[in-house]
Image 1 (spheres, rainbow, N blue to C red):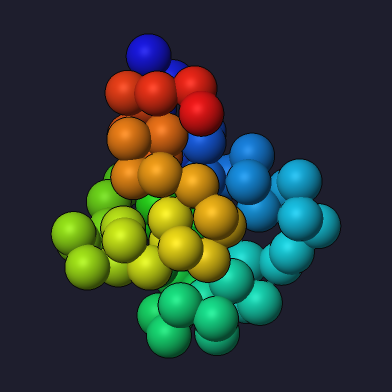
Image 2: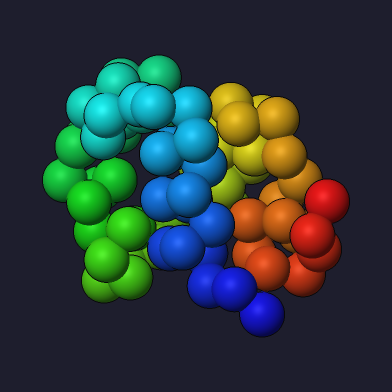
Length: 68
């Protein structure tokens, strides 16, 4: 199972987006993005859904429960 932090970072890199760009799109701080990518923190449920919609993936994918 691939951890959220790796899935999230991979999605951001695939889209060639900066942490700041993703932060603005999700209405969170760049510091939040950084802490998610290092595994220091995790997004709350509502934000997790926003991330899934933004990257057009399922929450299960973000959580490492699915490869789709």
